[in-house]
Length: 354
Ligand SMILES: Cc1cc2nc3c(=O)[nH]c(=O)nc-3n(C[C@H](O)[C@H](O)[C@H](O)COP(=O)(O)OP(=O)(O)OC[C@H]3O[C@@H](n4cnc5c(N)ncnc54)[C@H](O)[C@@H]3O)c2cc1C
Image (tube, rainbow, N blue to C red):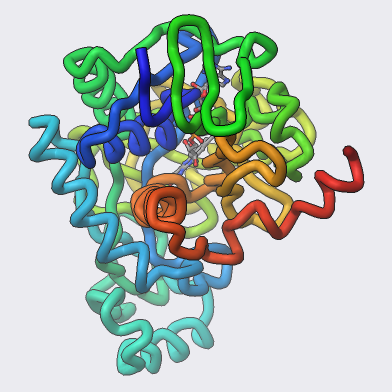
């Protein structure tokens, strides 16, 4: 069989990419290693235009956020599933300085579209510690990645586009304009292997810096109607069930849950949350982050049919939709890639190794 694209991996990246390609009329075959854990299965799926301890605007937020809403809505319609849950995010203030700064930023056009309201100390929220009040952010929420991956799986099966087995890279035959893998021939192969990139000798020169993360699943006495974000996040996903996370561990890169992470999250949770809770689960995963914290996207420096879409790091949900669109325009129409995500910034690493 002849295909336009062979996609390797069916986490968030491979799922969204293969859905997008099929919707645009391309013939696609996806290989999925069903025995391997996915970062995407551990993720909370939050999208939030601000980031980090100092809450700076997420890189490219003004491009990413309008785009992701349309993208997930279209996917929901096509696949007849619900994945996007818009939800405000509450950020308690820790200092008077913060309170003043954000009180001013609400009048700044660059920020105001993302701030719903400043909550004063007198009207503070009873469920969390917020003696100085805080701010309620908008254009936030979460994507139910589990539902998305299952929905895309059904779509791939309907389109005869799924192989539920690993792709063995050593058995890939490379020609000038196409690749052959067993019975399948494709003009392009796109590796969406997430944290497993290092097993791929064509692309393991790229500087992936995986980061382990763990999340607790808790049952709250009362359901929250907003995400809380201060040191940790508390994300209400289903009634009284919420996710609490996440840890960042650059050293222990295994997929198992740990007591240390549970303790670390619970210490923060006890400080932040003012209502009783019960821990009912815990999960761990490895984020495919890169050395400069920007995605790793593009075509192999030597072998034209090989491409990579990786390095989504901590923000796969917000980055993937817009970057998939830009990747498609790059591959099919020769439009330039955003320099910060293009793997050409690391070509020197490839040439120094080969
Ligand atoms: C604890 C935690 C919390 C997170 N929270 C958020 C969040 O709130 N918001 C957010 O946006 N992001 C979050 N993330 C990050 C998010 O999970 C990632 O950005 C995203 O899931 C990466 O998706 P991926 O498809 O690149 O990788 P993965 O989901 O790991 O998928 C890669 C897939 O490729 C498959 N594969 C590899 N090699 C082969 C092969 N040879 N053949 C076939 N298949 C292969 C693997 O088996 C795997 O299924 C979080 C991550 C973690 C760990």
